[in-house]
Structures are given as structure tokens and as C-alpha cells.
Length: 230
Image (tube, rainbow, N blue to C red; front, side, top):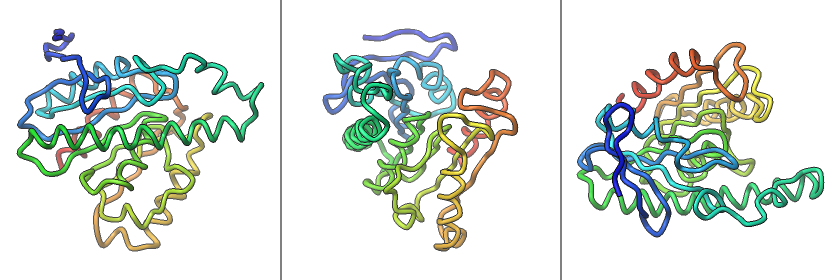
């Protein structure tokens, strides 16, 4: 099924590797997966697909495990900290990240099978950024990671990401995902010698929170596209 987006890019809808997805762009272009945040769905990243397609990429947005077309029937209960407690909800979150990361690996594998490229990228927002880190840790086919307002899962081994190009974009005053988690990752990577291998970069947006304002997005998006193209 096809749709025409606001900037003219054709958006297709269906499944990849059994996962509900939207996709856009020339399949001969560099391929990547775009990931939404907690409680969201692939449709949240519609404009990102259009922008990436316009920049020459083949981009897919998928529903995370338990989200979108495969949303948990008891989603609100699963992630209700008041009734279930922080530890239980954190475990639910980690399981969702793990399952989704493996889905991303399968989807990217399927996309690369139809591509002249051997490696791809992951662009994740909020929870999607956590998934992106885990996917890059699991699959060498992820050459580039862009994490926006997300962070590495707590068990992430920085040593496994030294050869992955990593860009983090984070608000200085993020109230949901503290910026210290991202700073800690970059500190560990530098200590392990990342500066001598694959480039890592951190963009911190002064005064910004977890949800970026329109002008902040307007300033950041060209930097993301430039990073992917470098």
C-alpha cells in the first residue's frame, strides 16, 4: 500500500521480516531503520522517512515490540510505575528494548539483502535510541547509530561499539533520560580509545528538554543528515 507524503516522498506500508513497517526511498540507497519512542508507533516517524528519502536514503520505520499494530493490550498497566513500581517497569522496558533490537536486526538484514550496501544505520528517538544502542551492540551490520534523546541500556558494553560511528543528540535538561547517561558512555568510549578508531560525537542542545522545540529540530536535523552522509 502506498501513500504520498507532504514533501512528495512515496511512503509504503507492509511488513519486513514479519514486523509492521513503513518505508520510503530508493532501495539502492544506503539503508537504515528509524525507531519511535515509548508508547509511540512507526507513524510517528513519517516525516523522518520523507526527509531521509529526499536525502537519498532507503529508510524503514517499524513498530517496536508491544507497540503500534502489535501494541500490548495491557500496555498502560505494564508501564504504570505507580501500581507496579520502578523496578518492574524498568524490566518491562528492558525486555521491550531487547526484543525490538532483534527485530531491527532482522529488518535491516532483509533490507540489506536487496541493497548494494553491506551495512546500514539506525536512527532512534527516546526509547528508540536505547534500541539503537542495543542493535549496534548485537549486529555488526549497523555501521552508524544516531541516538536522539535516548541512551545506552545499562548493560551496554562501550567496548563493543568502538568501531561503530555513534552520534548522540541530547537536550541539556532532559527530564526523562538524564544527559549524564550519554556523557558517561562517551567518557568510557574515549577511555577505551575510540578517538583512534570510529568517530563518536555528542551534540548537546543548551536549554532543551526531552522533547525538542521546532527550532531546535530545525537546527539539529541538518546535522543528523550530515553525520549519516560523512
